[in-house]
Length: 231
Image 1 (cartoon, helix red, strand yellow):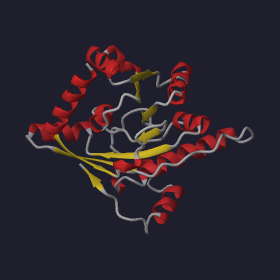
Image 2 (tube, helix red, strand yellow):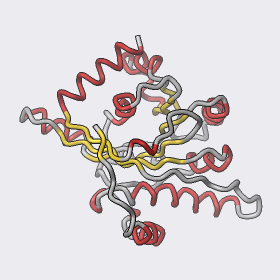
Image 3 (cartoon, one colour):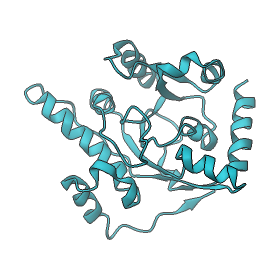
């Protein structure tokens, strides 16, 4: 079933979009890690299964989608974890930690929901907590071109949408200090969001566009080698 669903995803995505993946080699072929990505369109949840044929990659998805039969069915094959976005879902957090400790990886949007504007909205602390608690690397990924309105508009005009996934450099977060836990958790969340923002065009950076940490990251990357497109 999983192979069939992935074939359907690949077929549909190739019909509706031209997809470019930049620096995909930065994603390890095995081992546990957290892919932290922005979230601007409903097709984002299947985008990583378009690119990666992996059984060890899990994707937290808002619990409201569990009520939609076809998404629930697809989620069984594509490793969706349905999560309560509005309350502390400790059961889901424990499951994600256990999956990573068993050698699996997560693809997760720190914002917790789609950005209706396309620009980054405030990141929630859950991803930073998982990264600091587990010690596994965070891989920032930026998605552009998957906004629902953009996809639908192009479909109406029989045009393919230009979609880009850009992978950043992995980084790790130190364990949370007990004395300054809340402040450190906020700092870590800002770090993850600014690492994603640095991969995005300016118009997608949202509330992080003028963040001091983003300016530091962009300045440090001036002399980096050019990104390599894949696929």
